[in-house]
Image (cartoon, rainbow, N blue to C red; front, side, top):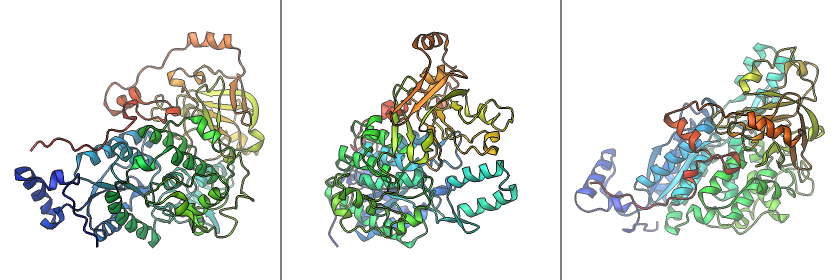
Length: 578
């Protein structure tokens, strides 16, 4: 084994210190049973784990951390595990997105404040992955991501069941009488049948793939199921690799380049990934000084077909995706078609092209070839502009109904998701299949936290009449497991005076996805008059974290990060107070 001792390492400012300071640091660490030899200048590797029973997707990460430790010890490093908060979308209210930035702050400060030379990031649920990447990027110490892996496929009465996606389907079946309450109760136990995050191509799976596409996760590791032994092999390999990365000084700033972000955007289109990737990638880019805006997510994907046939846009699930070749097979297809940059360096120390050179696509149903794609080019995320969304809005075309991508209909406006849910089952609700449901005050500041509420269920009377989709417009987000013709992230949001605040019942809303426009067919003079009458909502929070959030959160087109967190703050060793 290579001798990895180095008296100049960052960690040696603690453990190599002379006199009282060094004695304090070393002696307290030795109460855990460490011998004096581990403080000899070898790399100290932090293992940041978001394991929590309050975040079911992340509950197994303590076991993953043990595998990482084995790898660090094998490579001659000193592994030190530490906890971070876990922002689990499954339980947190009002939304885990409210706490993504708080988690990113915590991860950043914990890494900087402690005697670490490199860090392995253990994430799972969808907000934990971008939060950890954002925090690590701002410190810029060598870092590698290990996501916890998807659950095994759900199984219900002989069919595959997808987490999240089938929640919406079963709810519709319940409302239309196709399922009973007892059947739904039984079905929910068939959906999440192992450790891991959503096994659909929801936001958790999307962000795991995006982390791999960016080069921050080992090739192929995004797709191994959480309970597959190879998930632990991957974690152990990451533990070995981070020690080498410290030696090589391979930091996030060398990996997270403009070309890496372009690769991630195109990969997101090819896998039919979540619209939430737009917000998370934009926020992460802001941490490393890469200019990324909504139009990049439209321009870069127009030539990219959807290659992956997974729910919610398709048929299969992440377990099938893994066995079909996983993300390396997708990236190899895109590289072969000239749709990816092959040159960016990754956490392996090798390039994207090197990492995918031996990738194989197994079969043709789950990962389709570039010349016979699951959906043609131009079916990825589209970014819309217009007088309803001057700073942009997004729609996931692969999950929308083709006949609604051009649509004109009267608005039915609700000032909150709760206001809609209160009347959604009312048989007298004044809507039909042409109505455009507008939900507002669900943006970063307005809710607060920009929850996943945009894909509200259709009115019960329309479901019972056989209507399966209708246009919905919202300044909030949609779960990556969701589907439908839903316009999201309308910016500026209503709560800060965006045009969505001016819409009234009956106003004609015109959606033209091919033309990339969303507009309100109301003349400018009338909109100006309404703006004069509009008053901002009263501030609901005067203290605490939520106050901090509402005062400093940026709009969706800027990634909904805090303005004061943009850019990096480096890894300079803090002053010693001993």
